[in-house]
Picture 1 (cartoon, rainbow, N blue to C red):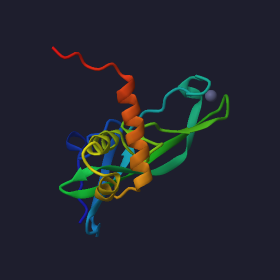
Picture 2: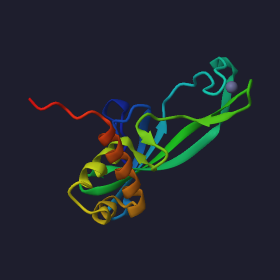
Picture 3: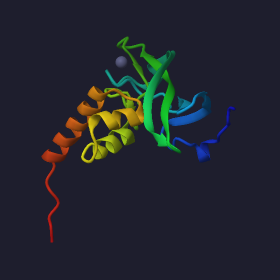
Length: 156
Ligand SMILES: [Zn+2]
């Protein structure tokens, strides 16, 4: 069953992404959300050339794990526009603010699994979300290091 959604009630709630369809049937315990970027073409991020000098350069489909929904794992298949600068010749893909390319997951999933790792094992957290243990460990270590670096809140 494919369910159509509308921007004002998009199930992802991620800025710059709109859901096209949701696949809950292909796998018993995982939901696939097909979404596409809605970002407008901007200036060149490399040489700052005006947006009029930037042209389309196809599409790129990336997979990102997201927080569970109704107890099911979630994978977002994000269809993003690619662009090419006619001045410097470089290409790039839309950068969706809530997606982390390094870990292949959403920023909110990184935060969620990092918090879970304080009370659960890397293996259990990895299994819950269908990601490998090494990725969980890397995400947690970056999170813990960032937390350590930030000033502690003052206790009254
Ligand atoms: Zn450029």
